[in-house]
Length: 461
Image (cartoon, rainbow, N blue to C red; front, side):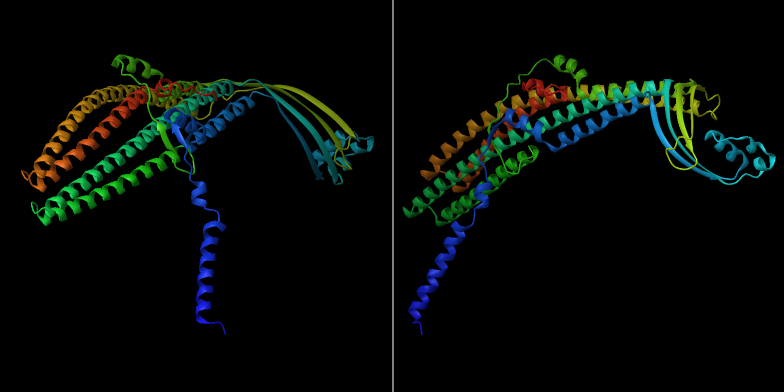
């Protein structure tokens, strides 16, 4: 029988072995998957343009739309078809024509009894047919419309790139801002620890109250809670950036600086006419006018040529007892279609007017957005100066009140209130600086020049 002491030592060895196996036997997935990737703002934008799911979806939609050009062009190209047909009949007309196509007509076949009451006959017909449109007005207009719509979809993708770029810029700024909020919260914890130290020292020297120590300890706990919230915000900001970049991890931002200087308002309003979504709607307005041409194309005839070559046999498919060919030219003209063309043309004109009004409204809306963004930049710039001035006065006020509290000339409540104002002022400076950079990026985004202003070249599609 194993003594109890030996069993206990064996149990401890088993526990130690299990802990060692857990720590070193299994791969530490969290540590391996966590990366310390640090990107600049431009690098983050370039990665998003390559990997973002919305941009990829837009490019797929563009590629699918370009196939419409080939579909429209196919209506102008020749149609070639091969057909194998089988017929068994005792119909007098079909029976006689089948024997004729098979080159098997003989003198007895003209007997009235044979003509009127033929025996059942088999006919295998193999044929190849070619038809070439010569003039198809609708197909020509449709080809122009498909090309124009493809260009419009390309502008849609470009606007989506600008939207994603703006989102990445904001996400990068949010990462840096969240990091600065963590620093502000750390300063708050350090200040709270200093206040607790002073309160305890005053109580120890019988010049302060124990209630001040308790309240200072509570303030320190609250400061640590704010630090936890700030750290969580920083982690979420990094993860949000990773989602935009289609990355499985949470990249950090090494540098989010960009050189976007404020220009005159007229500069932004002039370049806004080249904004991708405005250009896309202009192209669709052009297609709305083409739609009128498409409706009017119904008044034109359809002209084409064609031909066929056929083999007929009464025994087997692809047999060649009889051979024949034919060449044709045709003109098909719908003279009356129940006034459908008139209604289609009227509908197209109303749709063209609708798009024209939407375009006018969009341009005015863009002009207003640019004006608003330009004012936001000016406001944000002024708010930075005010926030920095407020921080200076808050720091000086906190310093003076700290000295007064140390000398017993002020209460802890006054010191805590002043410290809260200081933390708010610190956070205010961080927020205002982020707001200014965001406002600059928003102004470039609204004018459609964000990628150009960031010196990022677009790839051709």
